[in-house]
Image 1 (cartoon, one colour):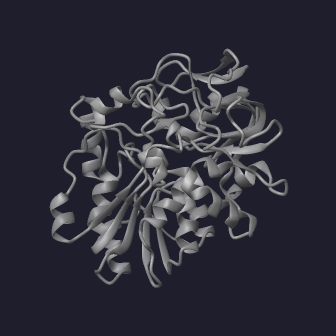
Image 2 (image 1 turned 60 degrees about the vertical axis):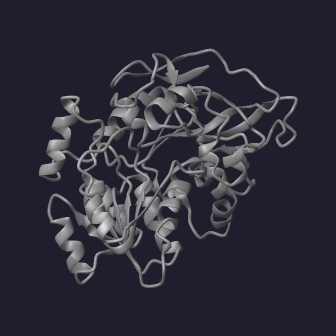
Length: 389
């Protein structure tokens, strides 16, 4: 089959790889009808995610039609149309039973490697390094789904692929980011990053009752899409973000601050962002946490800092003194997608949101390598790429 594969920093190829096969009775195999390039895939493209091996198949936002089912899987049948969560979960362990599916204790066969870096291991993920299981991803013509009697959700016939594809990751992640803020009537939510997850967080914050959303970025197309969703936008190259948020909130700070950027924050946003880039270039640091620092300072006393941007290692000079002395609460996670799927599918069915609003580019797998570069460089107004094998 054709698939997008990783061969080093900046080297993504569309090439032929072996077709997936059933390996366990709970498996299923789907013919991929739509997949997407995620902002977190760009961390792989940039070479900052450890544990990648040449030829690894990428992608964790995938849906398709079931073409084969393992003997032990009674949930799915050939012909079912499903969306696949990016988190792989057994459904039976301590964490899965409590709804923390992304913390699954069984789905990461490389958990000892992950534990050396993080102290313990999360669950396995599709297409995201051998720290997280080394599972082949879904930017391909076919995908094997482990524990397929737990993860995939069946899609009603009346909904298009583009309406439901983002249930695989960015819609649940953006929704979770807003939900973490425990939004109350009248709340102001500030969101750093107007990429796909930031856009979903904007809409989700309003769905959950926010009175005002402040969206922070510098890319014109992203800011325009945020305004179309009802947000007040700030360009961090044009304004002092801390001063503007304090002005807008009468000196109090935002009730909830969402970091939807993560480790690769813009290196020209401030003096500390430049220093972060120097440290990572000299191997004196693993991440660039400028946005997290700013979110902490911009959050009101006893407010919430919600983190859904990807961080990989050890963060330097995070102002914990500010957080402790002002009673901030931190919420963060790899999204336990399965927990959110039923409620978010229902919101789509009711017409409360159509997540396809974020799509700017549609292409084939063969065009995927070029679109990785377009997406990374933010060229051609690119916000979200959907590939149709």
